[in-house]
Amino acid sequence: MERKDFETWLDNISVTFLSLTDLQKNETLDHLISLSGAVQLRHLSNNLETLLKRDFLKLLPLELSFYLLKWLDPQTLLTCCLVSKQWNKVISACTEVWQTACKNLGWQIDDSVQDALHWKKVYLKAILRMKQLEDHEAFETSSLIGHSARVYALYYKDGLLCTGSDDLSAKLWDVNTGQCVYGIQTHTCATVKFDEQKLVTGSFDNTVACWEWSSGARTQHFRGHTGAVFSVDYNDELDILVSGSADFTVKVWALSAGTCLNTLTGHTEWVTKVVLQRCKVKSLLHSPGDYILLSADKYEIKIWPIGREINCKCLKTLSVSEDRSICLQPRLHFDGKYIVCSSALGLYQWDFASYDILRVIKTPEIANLALLGFGEVFALLFDNRYLYIMDLRTESLISRWPLPEYRKSKRGSSFLAGEASWLNGLDGHNDTGLVFATSMPDHSIHLVLWKEHG
Image 1: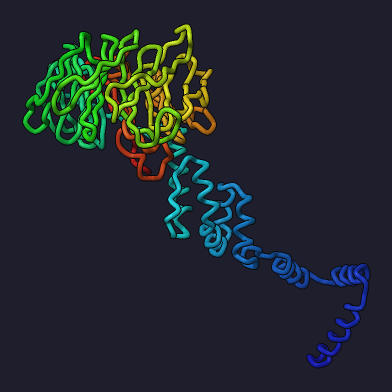
Image 2 (image 1 turned 60 degrees about the vertical axis):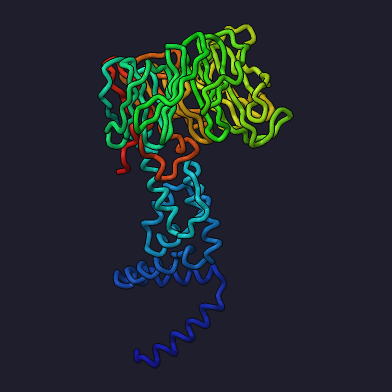
């Protein structure tokens, strides 16, 4: 058939075909297929596949594509990225999807980042770190060697670790390099705290001392306790130092003058922890910005106002059992909004505005977990054998790391948490540096550090 005649015939057939019912059209197609050979069937197969496929991500408006993508889980989305360059481009730019996925993993979100492709990259980094945590491969260990007797006291700040020992010395270490930055002669240290210029130590000789790092000179000596000093804290702005002792008292001192301003009584056990912190919430007893002193013993946590009034009285006493049948672990977290302490019954979290117990977190599979650090997303816990990370949103343990036979301390001074910002959510930058440190029977310091990202 000539081309012109064929086109005329095809036009006539098309008009007739369009006038048929759907059933008649189907019968017509069936008949034509039955008359077709291999070449025609192959042609039909190739063209049908193209005609039946619809790339909805390409055809839909971008806003509708993003809405549909929100219903898919991240792993499926990653698989969809392999379909085509266009799909990968659209899915990678779906910021809300990847931000939500990161949040679900416990990642902090910085809304100021404008790069549309940023959050998929962050998610891939996050999923790698979370897998390392689940597989117990996120950390590594090292040791600090330099003391010749038992290390009683540890304090960490900004990449530097201070250690106080029975060898009558205190050392300041750079955790990243393992090098000793300063080493000065002191009394036997039961507790230490430092800043760039000075070191404050509490001792088994019942005194508190202030030392200058650069010269090693003792610049102040605080005498008055009749028992060992187990905890110290200070604030340069207030010019106040506080100390907790085995004599059951808390003393408030003038930091620069060395004079005792007040002795706080009411504890009936060793005061193993004092914390001086600015309040961040309002209640009937305090306002945001007020300085608050917390002191803890074996059974109770006492809350004291401090700031304008030095001669203060106890605002509140917290405990987990009225009959003192349950002991508190010698670690205390206070960030100005919440108080957290661990006991044999679990982790207790108090609301600082109302002093009510917000929740009790129990871990029935592992008893007597001690608190190291507590944040908005994660908590760092440990026992005699392992270091644990808990996801506070689900109250489940998501990772653990084996610990050596470290020195035990009833006062909780010979072990501590390192960097704490990641407890409020990882961000790809804060999972570096020190996680945990403890003193060892051979007088060394055992460090657990974040492993670099793969």
